Structure formats: structure tokens, C-alpha cells
Amino acid sequence: TYVVTDNCIKCKYTDCVEVCPVDCFYEGENMLVINPDECIDCGVCEPECPAEAILPDTEPGLEKWIEINAEYAAKWPNITVKKDPLPEAAEFDGKAGKFEQYFS
Ligand code: SF4
Ligand code: F3S
Image 1: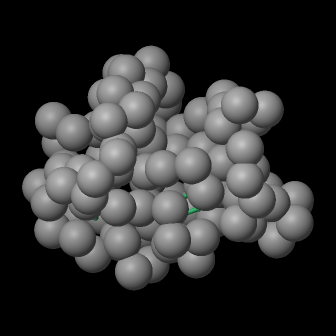
Image 2 (image 1 turned 30 degrees about the horizontal axis):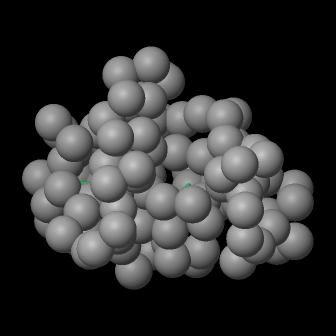
């Protein structure tokens, strides 16, 4: 499966939802997550994310994000249509420490 990671936070570009063939993205206030039970591992979303926030869960060090994607995909609503990025997206793209301050 693929997972959405830190750099989506406060950017939320949503290009990813347009290309996912199984509509498995779920939306929080400041980021999206992928439902690991629905993702078919096609990989088409990874290069579409301007923030490079989507990674295969086989990358090292993603344990926290694997748990977060699974947990919040069960809590947040499904999103299938692209919308405007968050107004502060450009400012927050690439910033460190977004999870601690802004995860929601
Ligand atoms: Fe959707 Fe494919 Fe990305 Fe999984 S890897 S979230 S199925 S686009
Ligand atoms: Fe987030 Fe990238 Fe999608 S910033 S909303 S994972 S396109």
C-alpha cells in the first residue's frame, strides 16, 4: 500500500484524489490519508503529489505513517474530487515539524 506522510500537512494539494482508480483517499482538516484496505498499490498517485508526500509503505521509517493512515482513514470522510490547496500550501511545503503542530 501507499501512505500519505508529513509533507501533505497544511498543503493538501489534492491532485492525488483525481488519479486514484479506487477513490481511497480520506480527508482531515490539514491532510489526507490513504485507506490501506482499499489501496491497490498501483502507484499512480505518488508522482502526482506536488509536495512529494506519498510514499510506498516499503520505504524505511514509515511505521508512524502506516498507523496514522490506517487509523484516520477509518475516521475521516472520503474525498474523490480535487479542490483548491490550503491557502498556506506554498508557505508550508517542505517545512519541518508540521506533524507536531498541525496534524489534524
Ligand atoms: Fe490510489 Fe493507487 Fe495511490 Fe493506492 S497507490 S492510493 S490505489 S492511486
Ligand atoms: Fe496531500 Fe499531495 Fe494529495 S499534498 S492532498 S498527498 S497531492
